Length: 409
Image (cartoon, rainbow, N blue to C red; front, side):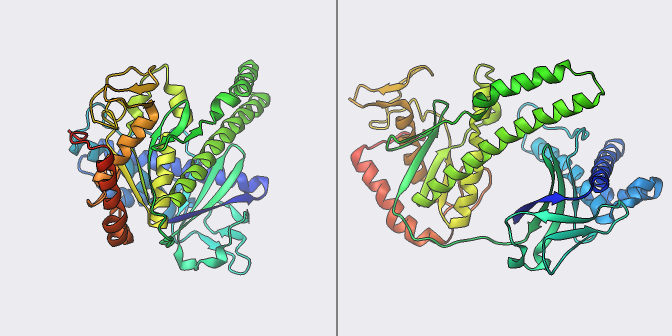
């Protein structure tokens, strides 16, 4: 699937109509969740049928397109299905019991309720009874490259700086590239965004830390405004835009670095970090969230599938403690930044971890799937070439340089 996003230009009354459609979608999602809580054995199709009951009982719900109502019900069922899945897998701690939506920001249409201008493809008209009407699309993407049948869903999104229209396209994006005969192991961190197995580092931009002074000033201005006043709404809007800017900077940086890594290597090995557990450390939670390791991983896996490269997430246990030269465990605290082993190996802690990560990734390169989020075929179309000629050869060369027998024990 491919998502193309455009900025929306419209009149003030159309923006209000979009807000009303978003509120209706939130209402339907919460009502479906309540229906599931109150009635035992409710399934996905029962929630879709319940949308018709809501449309009959509430006039404003009937004004929203029928498939948009079903899409809201599917959002509720997505949270329910995730809760069921966590219970079946017996995940320790909280299972993610579905919660009512408090601040909804989008409404999603399926195949009906909208009509794209087929001549210019720079305008879209929503035909339900909410009164949204014709919206002008502003953006650099060209929808002429895609057939109208490929557009599976259309989503209206509200953000701090305006409204956006997203087109979800059924497109299989795969680009064939020439092999680079290179592999890389990445160890992400806070002082450096990542360190590879060759000792190269990428500085951590720390966007939140850089913009923290401005955010604190805007927060003080917001706290001084009277609740319910227009000045408070304006101050809140400025604060939201500041946070949105930092979020976009972080996303663009992760995307750019991940693209560069994928283009330069045939195999990328990285740690399978549990970010949810790491942020429980209140001393490092802000810095970890600002680093956006998970977002970087998402982009790595996306570009890996797009360009047919191998991306492998390996377990993070003992990657920093084990010696990359002899395999011996060398205990060290988080403040110890240099790895020193009795075998004579002395190098940067993160570089040592990156070497261990790469070795573990290469040792699993011939297997189906990865240690990552989903069981995908990591080798894809390059199985015969990369696995047989490049990867196994580099495993042998690494083992000859520094034989390790118990890294994965």
